[in-house]
Length: 127
Image (cartoon, rainbow, N blue to C red; front, side, top):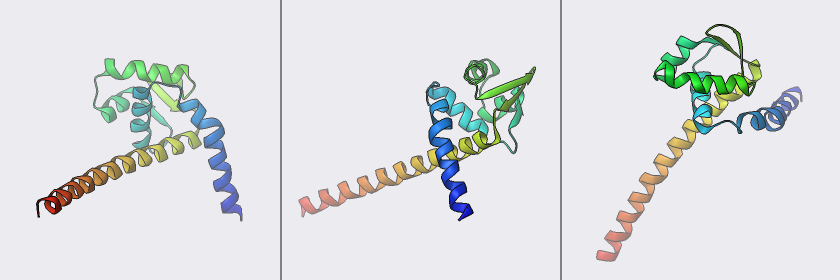
């Protein structure tokens, strides 16, 4: 009973608070935040880690991190140090990362199935 209540509370927290906070930011910022979040063990990271994780130049990563700070997703306690505002938000980001990769895998499977279906239809029509 407690597990169901915890899952329901987390789902409501995501739906009511995290999702409305995450979705107004630019899609590229979302992508970078998810990419950073999925590679973290705790909610703190340094700018150099973000650059390493994203494999982008620091000048390319900086504006997106600044947007996340302005929107309240990240806190900046000191120079080049960032913290996701809550550990549950970091968990939300990590679940988003898994969801995004599952969607990509599903799309790849769907496209290969579609190609097989088209080839099968062509073979049937020829015969």
